[in-house]
Length: 194
Image (cartoon, rainbow, N blue to C red; front, side, top):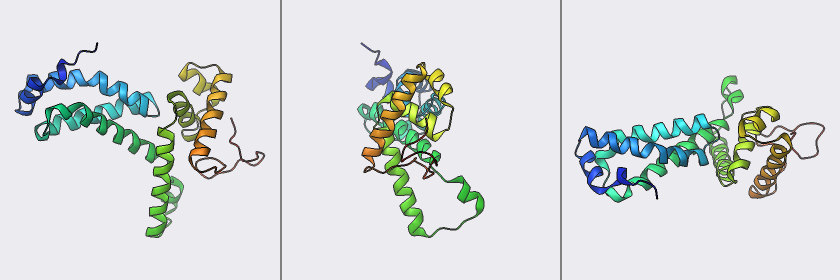
């Protein structure tokens, strides 16, 4: 059974009252739980650590405004979830358009943001290994062997997980074909290169 003393009502109430030792105990106790949760949602270990740190910073700044002490864990996990989603959305921004100074209409911007949210949500719903492989390979553009090595998979297992992730994502997004960012690899027929 996990140690939940960091989330005890008495400790949280003391932290809310400004007791520095209690705040430190809550932050220290929450870190491993928040980090583990972030690892399941974020694309990379670095994003997971960053999301966990952001959640802990927010907790530190706003623990005094938390209304229900029993809601601490769910509040923390919501912050982590939002931070991981925010980081995933950033990956889908189109830097080439921003750099070119292209002006889009408000309608185009809303549609683009909605599409990015749908893709981010669909990726979030993938099984853990598939999500990590897809993000590292298709979004971040790491070579297949690097992805396999980073995740402790054989190259064949990485390719299999990537194929499954792409298929699930394609089905989740309504059967569209082609890569997430809209580029098409000439020489393929509606599939992404591995």
